[in-house]
Image 1 (cartoon, protein in one colour):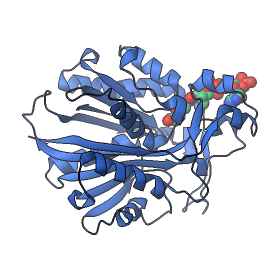
Image 2 (tube, rainbow, N blue to C red):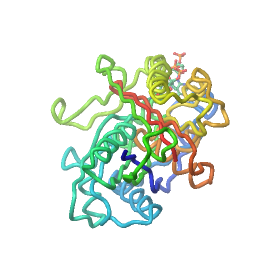
Image 3 (tube, protein in one colour):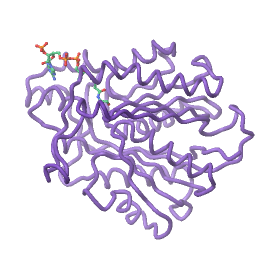
Image 4 (spheres, rainbow, N blue to C red):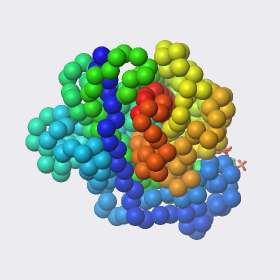
Length: 323
Ligand code: UT7
C-alpha cells in the first residue's frame, strides 16, 4: 500500500525576539504570570513588512533542501494558515511563484491551530489515492498582525513562524511497522465558534479584525478533545502510548500539554516542548517543534510519533506516523 513519508522538514522564525519582560512594558502583565500560566518565556515576531509568505517560503526552501529535492519534484503545495497575506489569492500560490514552480497546484487550508494536522491529513489522502507523489505541506503564521496589543489576556500568548515538510509516496506493507503516516483523525464542532475567533472578516466587517478568546473555555475543552482523537488513532492501529517515541503536540500552553500527556499516560521525556521559546504559532507550531527535534537528532528512523492539535472552531486532530 502507498504510505505518505516525511522525507524532509524545515522551519523559519523571524529574527526579532520579544520576551515576557518586553511585553510587561506595554500591557499589565509579568514574566511570572506568563510563565506560570502558559510556560511561554519568549516568542518571535515578524519585522515590519515581513509576511506569512516570507516565512512560509523560507521554511519551504529549508524543507526541500532537507529532502534533497527541488521544487520540480513537487506536485502540490498545501499551506495551513489563518493569517494569509491577502484575503485572496491564496498565500500558497504566492509561495509557489516565489519558489519558481510553474507546474502543479497550490492551495491554502484553514483550521487555525489545527491547520497543520488538517493539511497533513489532506496531503495524506492525495498521496494514498495516487493523485500526487510529493507534496509540500507548510504551516506559516503571522499572528502578531491579528493580536490586540492592548489585550493582555491574548497578546502574550502568540508568536510568528513557519515550518514545512515534504510528504512523499512510498510503498509500504500495510502494517504499523511501515514508515510514514499510519493514521489521521480530524474533528470539528462549530458550536464552539465564539470561544476563539477573529472579530472581523471580508464578509462581515470588511476589516481584518483581532483575535478574541475565552481562554478558560478553550482550556476546559482542550484536553478532552485532544485525548479523543489520540485514543481513536491508537485504537485503529492497535498501538499504545507505550509504543510512542515522541509526542509532538500543538504548542499553545505547557499546562494543556502536560495535562494531555498525563491523561494519555505518555511519559514526560517523550514530549517535545517548544512553547517556551515560540509561544503559540498556530498552524506553524507542530512543524516548528518537529523540525527542532529532528535538528537536535532526537528523532530517529523508525520512531513512532504522535502529532496533535486543537484550536479555533473548535477543530482538533491527530496524526500517528513512523519516522
Ligand atoms: O491553540 C489553542 C488556542 N488557545 C489555547 O489553547 C489557550 C487556552 N487557554 C489558556 O491557555 C489559558 O486559559 C490562559 C493562559 C489564556 C489563561 O490562563 P487561566 O489560568 O485560564 O487564567 P484566567 O483567564 O482565569 O485569568 C486569571 C487572572 C484573571 O484575573 P482575575 O479575574 O482573577 O483578577 C485575569 O484577568 O489572570 C488575569 N490575567 C493576567 N494577568 C497578568 C489574564 N491575562 C493576564 C496577563 N498577565 N497576561
